Length: 380
Image (cartoon, rainbow, N blue to C red; front, side, top):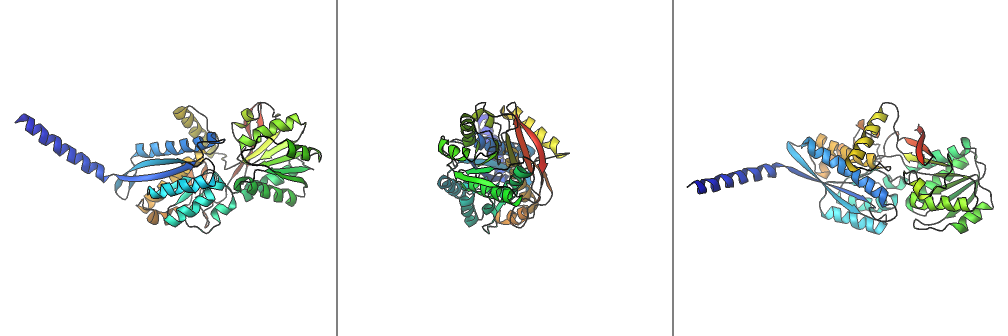
């Protein structure tokens, strides 16, 4: 009799437990970045930012529309390749994700944006800076960093006004990001009355730049700007040293990483490199960012590269919109996401304009001394 009673009690407990679990709202957040290939260190940094946000949200017991939300991260690798990026996007759509944070690169974010738009799924990029990303008319597309018009243009003016560049050379890697930021840099140089003495290009997998650097050397540049990522910038700096090109080296957030000194193998002079990161905090907000970096290091035993805090904020901004809309249904929380105003993240205040761009986006200028990245200033 006791055995039968135990069976009945166990069955009832299982039913109650199952009913409780069925009350949970499963919310799937997609994340896409290159976690393989030359910039895998940046992609993994992004993914860890997403994982930290998801873990904290689950620990808080977030309620959406009267139900306890259980967040799941569906992480995909796009290897920084546009075709793989659209395939990853379609896979997430097929998995019925409630929203996507990504992609890392502009070259993957832009084609993927159409896939998400067609499915009505909100997408927040933590790092894609090409202006085209938010200018295709999609209602589902957002970003939490300033774009290349601001970033490239600011660096262009800085090269002339602060670095006193007289002969400025420009190189890009022909990706959507690299070419876009180089174009805006060139406009900034010319707008500040500077002179571009040469424009060359390579690709995002190249390792030998002897031909283009030799061509530029004859024109005696005092500033070389590279539109691309740190995996290419490092070897380029090494070869500039070998060829005796004594010039300041500039770039956007793609080169502005903790890994750059290692990739340059000790060939960077103190203060030689000036780069800008899309985003930045100052004043009271600096403590939030410092606290995040300490928490990230304690959790994963690695330092933040660049974008992890922006991924973390993007996940939380998306969930904040779900809470305000009382729904994780993309069609229902998308209008709330578009109206995001004054959200206080670890990267600063987040408000979106009508295109989905962050309002009053900041840039942080950095240089390197003794192999360590040092902040110069935050500009808006």
